[in-house]
Length: 343
View (cartoon, rainbow, N blue to C red):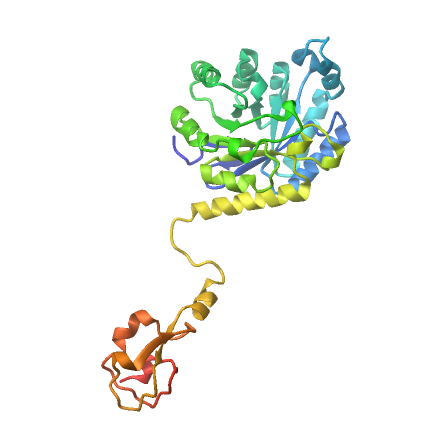
């Protein structure tokens, strides 16, 4: 697998040269369409590349007797509202990613302009969902949270059997929120598995960050993900879905900035001085100075020189250029010796 142009999401090429950052709105809107639109506007201000919505039809998702049926029924948006959400995201120069929790939503979302799909971890073993996403022709993400190896193998085999050249990335991560109000601990994030995924399946890989830390994306980029997703809440005080792993807008802005800066650092393969280092060199390095008074005409010996701060003079590594030459003027103790002072 080449690292160049490995995915195209909307008008954005995911090349691996930078982190493609997806902010998960999830269902923070709780069925409030105006709030969903506000979430798009808020995400646009964080510098994210895309926003992801979880969208469902309750009748495709839960049996009617389950408590979740009425909850998700209240959060449904119409096809026209989906189109408005997609248009709003694109007007903000963001890609729109849909985690469709109903396979029957995939086709209308694709027709409305959805840029990519995320096959939710709950649908990793759902042939209806996988097939619907493949039939859409859109690029997609395959979420591996709480998945066993044999389930991952099954999904990838189905994808490649049905559409060998499918454009997709695999998203590693963990999901512990249903078991309590607690995100994933750092030591349980298994970042090393990203390299295993990439090597085993020859696909781009990403991370779904379900920790509560704003610095986690910056840590994660060292493991090689080309995509990172993280939840946003307008305020954790609202205690909406997955609130305990959500960042608030200012925190998300910082998290994305840290991640991009870390990626830029990893992309730098040569030794370069950071801004300000030239000044620090002049202060903290040493220069060639006179160890005592040197009269004009004297040939300089090793005993005539010392190496002392500041470092804005002749570098000590050039001492051999000084030895044996004669002073063209009187020099005092601790005075920097320049080549122009010698003949």
